[in-house]
Length: 120
Image 1 (cartoon, rainbow, N blue to C red):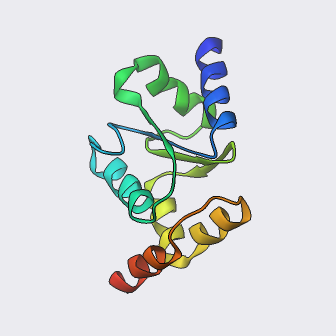
Image 2 (tube, rainbow, N blue to C red; image 1 turned 135 degrees about the vertical axis):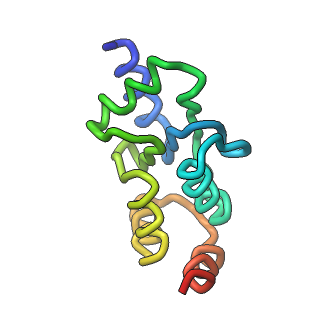
C-alpha cells in the first residue's frame, strides 16, 4: 500500500487540481463524480482526473490517503478539499472560486456565476 500512497502523493503534489473519480472527466461513471466533473468542466478548470475504477488499489488507496470514505475526492495544490457535497456547496457559495483564486488556478468566473444563478 505504501507504493499506492507514494503514487497518490506524487499525483496530488505534481498537479494543481486533481479529481479522483469513478470514470473520467469526459465520461463519469457515477452521479457524484459526474456532478463534480461537471462543475469543474463548466468552470473550465484545468484538472487531472484519476479513474479509481481502473485500479482497485487506487480506489481503496485514495480513501486511506485522505481518511475520507467516498469518491469523488478533489485536491487543489496537494490539499484535500472534499467530496461531492462539499464541492457542490463551495461552488454555490463562491468558496470554490475563492479557493481557486487563492491557489492561482485559472477558471471561468462568468461560468461560476452562471452556476449560482441557475441554482438560486
